Image 1: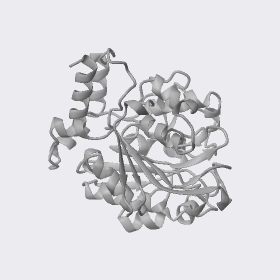
Image 2: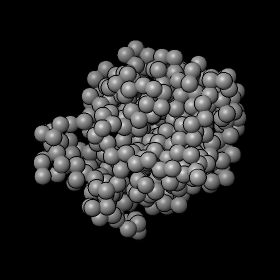
Image 3: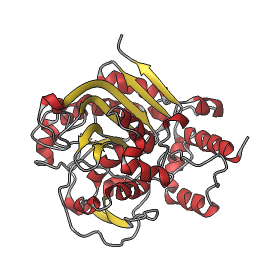
Length: 367
């Protein structure tokens, strides 16, 4: 067994046991500016996250002991919470047999989410008993319903709330900072608030004073920024973008959706691809679920014309943010490398963009 194969085996086995910790979080749709200041700052509290796979070659270098120990020390309570979970741990063989990414097609949104998560080993692989969970959909505007594909499908979000609570989450909050209109209006207009509350979750309005200075240690262009504090402190972040066209980034997917948890969005527009990757290195979702139930094919991010919407009835789920975005790009006829943030994220080791190296499972839900 090569070093890389051994390391990947150990990482996957450890992830299935809930022993790896450390995370960071972010997301977004629009460019509404909360502040123009993005100063150097002290790191915020880290949280537990899944460790993303990378595009390292077979002779890849092992992580340094210093890095590994510092990541473990960042969240001392998360591992103890995971160890206390009564959820039965998967065997190493089971962990290795799981797919890297699941594509569910052809059914109702909730059923596609449930089937996709089941194929990944269940929500229990990502949410432990007692966890504080934040779900970050794309609630872009307050003037379009979900049919216009500018906002994440409400039943996809509701299904994730249900699954997280079923896995034992202590609480599940859903939040975003809309580009157009108030959060309160957008939450209702999108239909997301209704489904979240029916599922037992809570909508949270993101207030300006909760954006805190946070360093981005791995950032190549963006070294610090203001990030929403509750996102940083959550045990689990679930990133739920809608797959849609974007006039600047080409597509809004998982990495672009993370702009919704930072304060100064206009500052991201210079060298957008690299800055999105930098941001993703600081805020790494535990799980990414791409809503492609209805896709906005042009005139994004806000849309407004139903002729621009394609009903694809597809959900993509993966613990690898880069992989999720890479596959979602193909739904628009694009290659992963045609998205600058995907290329930058893969180059930084945040995940895999080479779909040929991923174990992908496709699930047909509808008959």
